[in-house]
Amino acid sequence: MSWRFCFLLAALDLCLWACTSTPIPHAGFIGPTIQPADIILESYSPSFDDIAMMAWGTEAVERFGPGVVIVGAHGWYAVKGDWLVFPTTLNSTDTPDRPWPVETLIAYEEAAHPTGMIVLLCCNSDHVTLHGHPRVWYSHTDNFITPTRFTSPAEQIKRRLGYPDIVGDIDQFINAG
Image 1 (spheres, rainbow, N blue to C red):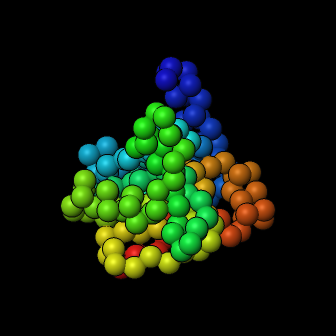
Image 2 (cartoon, helix red, strand yellow):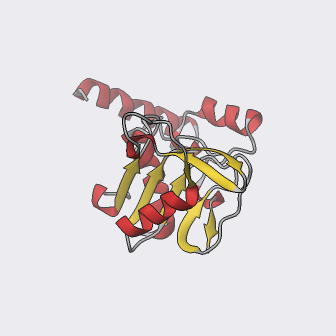
Image 3 (cartoon, rainbow, N blue to C red):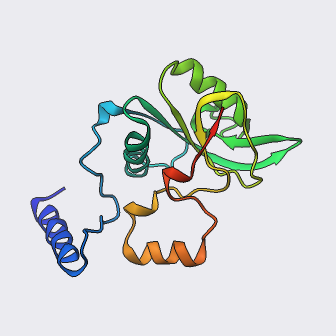
């Protein structure tokens, strides 16, 4: 990132702070409270880029503390009671869009990361309720790729008015215990 661009972003934040009583982070802003060592990012879909994953990571570390695992994969509907997710990059190149039951992805993550909280960023369109995984947190419905507080003021208004049921805040996630 060039120094001119950084200066422009800093000036924009200063202007927003002067016009409102609190600064509004610009899209892609990563708060100062998080360090890369505080989180583990497991992005299994190209849609979950590093900026979106770090933004959710910032929220997760603020809620759960360091050592949290952020898992990004597209979620889908439940079929015969199984909530399906698409961890594309865990599949073979022959079948990249093969769905997994979310319980299989949870088992994979629990084996790979035996400590710390696991946050699933997977849409849950059928509002499936999970049990038996006390370290796992997930959305009871669909969720945005980027948390709401890391979006522009216009995007925040659009989300609030147009998509009130989609989760955009880590405090809306529920436990699978």
